Length: 260
Image (tube, rainbow, N blue to C red; front, side, top):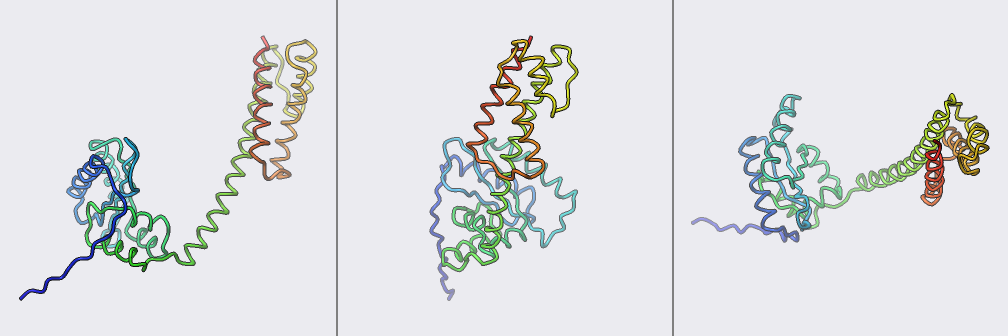
């Protein structure tokens, strides 16, 4: 007499429109047919998608059993892109190596946990479903390692955001410089060095009534600002400060365009 062993169910919270699910299954079937055992899992994840939004697909490939040579990786990329393109332009396919996905699970990384929470396996060779059960049983939890990594990443991203604002301020500086050079060249003047250009604007443009009298001081302000950023005398800038600079740069460049 055979014993009847009941299978546990994963209480999936994520729901997907039938059209999206069918599209994902079609893609998964074609991909698995092409690569076979090289594929460990193909998962639709992310939860309810907006109408005609992206359909997120995760493919987990087996880099433990198989060698991933550059030739294999390139062939895989070309074939998967071709299948996705022929299936639906809405497909957004991400590929992870099995070892990378396992590391996400090992430390309870939020990215991996979200995939388990919202994912439905379209192809599963026997590991994705058990991991989902472990998650819902509370046996996959964030580790101190993952917590520290996210704190470090948060600080890094915050620093990067400030650097991008400073870079944006430098872009405004070059916009002002380039427009000033263009205006002076229009008058057959040889473009001066950045530190002297405000004097040329005063002498050649303002005194001739060609541009607003504010232009030399704006040019000087941007030059000084650029020096302070480059010498790290200014290491952060608020969005409000950048907005003020943007307005001045717009005014300045429009004035330079008036030179005929």
